[in-house]
Image 1 (cartoon, rainbow, N blue to C red):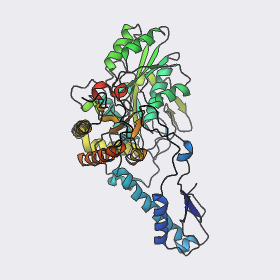
Image 2 (cartoon, one colour):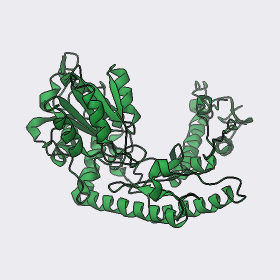
Image 3 (spheres, rainbow, N blue to C red):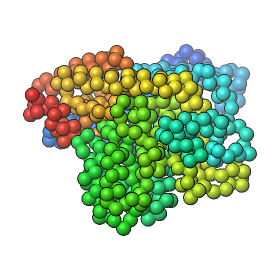
Length: 486
């Protein structure tokens, strides 16, 4: 069922409502009311849920639910629209209602690693320009409306954090964290064309996407209960392929558990296994890659170690309002990818061609406003609040785990999928997680905890089912099911 903004009807969940000033006589306030109905209507009924023994109810992933359930169609303006102004009024109503929806959803955002606490009002003056950083950041092209001077400033800042000299690094601001992984693994493949890609099972799905795209042999390595790569299993699998170089994805914070792979142990395993000078390491630091440098006693991610590249996301901990990221590699590697592009009067070694020229300005603005001390305070706040959430969950009898260097709190998956959607929780099997970002306050956590404990009391009140055992997910010491509750 497709909603429309045009001279037609929105049919959502069986409710048909006029949206865009049908019949010329519909006033803007009526349009707003209609749009409100469209945006507040419930989702279509879910498919039947299945229950596994000892597991919470599962919701099937059905693509049909996620396509065209509520869209605003594009329709040609009527001939007299400029005179009546009805279309402008209707579009203004749609945008106003959409903004209200964003405000509401932001209030209940906990499961995904985005810092929603930012103010870029000062940059509004630049939104009138089509800023495009196509090509190499360090070589200006014929297209003059770019922000390379901001981009290189941001790249220099990250190179300093990761201890790589200006004349030894190459990098660029990507369109997302996935692009950083695609580029890092591509560089590794170009350095070692016959290399085998190794990645822990809890690596981000983009790592395995890269293996498919580049048609690379990929070996999945087991993980410890924390989500960290199991270097004993890594060693066993390395030795099965002694004749092939190794390309390794090292996680600086896994997607679900926020686990940080032991970079030093990975390097030691490679060198002791006979792979010295025959490996390439890409560090996926999408979220924690920018938090780790500000955590006391945390292991360093540094190019003084034999790593090949590091990538982070700019829209996560930093709080950029559009998806973006930073990818840094060694300059010596990049000529394998770089090629001259006469059309641009530049060279290009990036994955994409055109790149968002606004993103570097947003990143530059934030780095200058907060600085090292500002980020350090925010990291400390995130870790402190994450410990608060973990402790409160356990006090409420809910199994929970928090890795030492992480702000991702893993806990028992809520039984009610409506609750999961309301709080936008990321789930996998029997577990869900909350990623504590600078925008997540104690008040917000208390709001969530109070609602969770209240709802949970009703889910299990009749005794017909019990909370799931989380031993296999978070370890016996973190499980509070009826068997392991002490």
